[in-house]
Image (cartoon, rainbow, N blue to C red; front, side):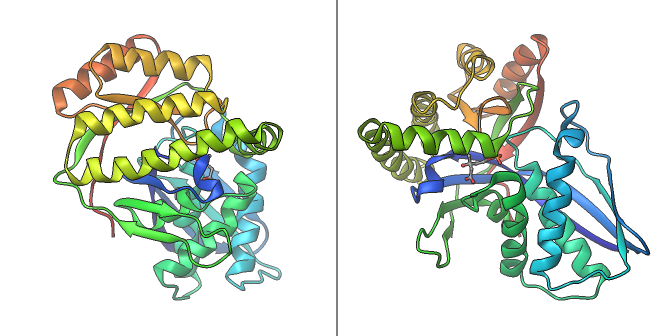
Length: 314
Ligand code: PMV
């Protein structure tokens, strides 16, 4: 049997903008997707035991199978007359927006490699998971699989010319509590990314100006994180949410949860990931504030993950 894990992630700055080469900041959360793989003699069978949004595993089944086929191709593994039994679990819930697909791809890639006694570097696992991500996201930036592979707190900038992406590890004074609230809506990242591309072509001037602001914001956030100025980080998260609203990737449920978190003392709050449902995140330093905000959101019937950013990667 082969085993492997991949980190869940939360995008703190720059989702959607990163697709176009604007830098983003992503942090792994201290929850993982875990996979076990055993060769079998017939088909590829996935048993998805992850907890999370109702229907998540069902809705993603088709994309999941395609992603596994893409991975096998990238690994140069042809499974003639052979199949795989894949079990998926771990502490990372299957909420949209937590990078659950990338985390599971990294976990499965590592588990397949172990089962077939193949040795891949982490960068190679990252490249394999990127291929897999295309099944879920169409034209992914690579931010999700990078965070899922390496963990930690990362500065990410896609290389639009096809060369290696810029990936830098950011240090932070100490891990900081956040909450991740799920709208319970299974979002389709691929469609959300397509929607932005369409509107960006239709309204170039408006979108250029928003994208410039996103670039400045990421750079300011990097400095604020370095200075451990959490109030500033929070306020930049709020601004990032406004930009995401302007490019029409938020929705009323996300805006509601963002407002609720802010009203209850969160330093900053924004949607995270593809939007259109999925998750939001709020910066809630200290256990007390984290619990207060989490409880308020749960009281309204939404699921919450209490976690931290800035936890060490591999
Ligand atoms: O929805 P998620 O967690 O897969 O995040 C997607 C992030 C996007 O920036 C919207 C797409 C991408 O490929 O970077």
